Image (tube, rainbow, N blue to C red; front, side, top):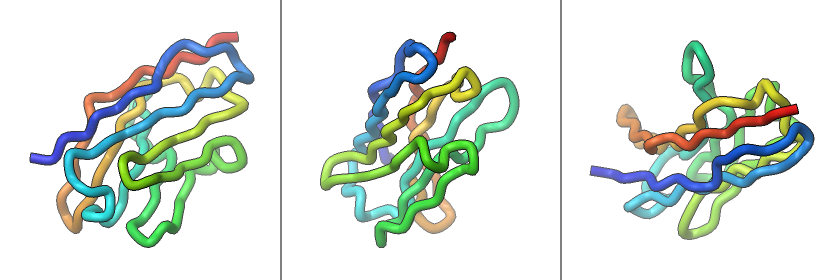
Length: 112
């Protein structure tokens, strides 16, 4: 069973920054995609993801403010210019073909 260990959430003032990290129990390069999803009241939505080849996708709301990156150990989501609407539980996701694994979630709260 793949495990995803997340860290880096917290309470931050609007305009501030946070970096989330997600370390899988298997090699990052064993997954087609790894990414971050946000769940506020409502559906869980994609924030950003990175493919095994290194290509990235971002939600429109994240473009220009969030950056997803990786090294051999973890995937990172660096968030700057945080807004109150970025508040939610952020879940790390790992995808391999039709299978998905999720982290336990980390809370990000942006206050003004």
